[in-house]
Amino acid sequence: MPEMFANAIGYEELMGRWSVRLAPLYTDFAQLRDVGKILDVGCGTGALVKTIVGMTRKSEIVGVDPAQSFVDYARTQFDDPRIAFQVGDAMQLPFPSAYFDQTLSLLVMMFVPQPEKAANEMRRVTHQGGTVSACTWDRDGLELASIFWEEAVRLDPGAEARSQRPKHSNQEGQLTALWRSAGLEDVKETVITMQLPFTSFNDFWDPHLREVAPQGAYVATLSEERREALRQGLRKRVLGDRPDGPFALRAKALAVRGTVPH
Image (tube, rainbow, N blue to C red; front, side, top):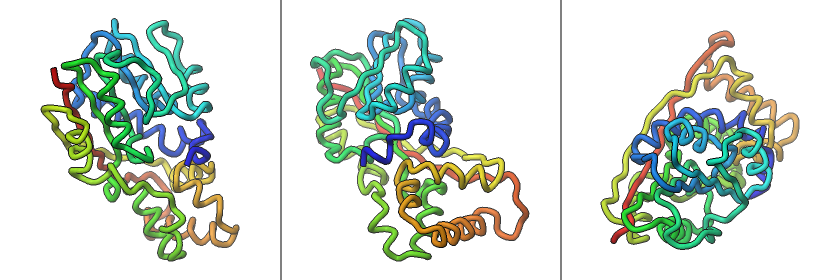
């Protein structure tokens, strides 16, 4: 799994630009406050940190991610003494207990091998009364991914088995169950919907050639002939018989928040 997130710039082109659009909607639900220390678990290239910085003036912000390339990239995006990034595992966070006032995680939980450990760690590092929240793409509600895999499986029935698609923490109710199992209180889950606009078919297709995320990792395994067949199939799916031009796809995300009990 880590190798599919090694290319920070490629990830920005495929998924990072949508993370930036989703982050403000998520932080509104997470009830972000400008107090104390804030932790971003699985900070990636810094999309959520960018939003947090714009919404706060006093808080210290720490981003942690297992991919060194993402941490290196994120550090180049900010010049603010309030912000720090470091390499770390969501299932074993390198911080003392009750160290943060708020802990957030954007588009990460579905990729964590043992999400229960991550949820428990997020609770552990957050002090009593602090908020712990997370947001993931809905498995079937992100057209960018669902259309890709439907077409891939149509052309190659073995694509689903090779896809490395997340199979947890990305369907309604799963995040709520995870948060309750971690002992968090006042747990609430919501659905966030948005549009993903593309300027052209190549704006949609080219990022899939960067070997990042499950889609890019799958495309990298295809022969030139199979890759072209997938490209043509996807073009038909998103444009139909229309000439190339702008279009939009729907996106659905799931978000959860809870409070560390006193």
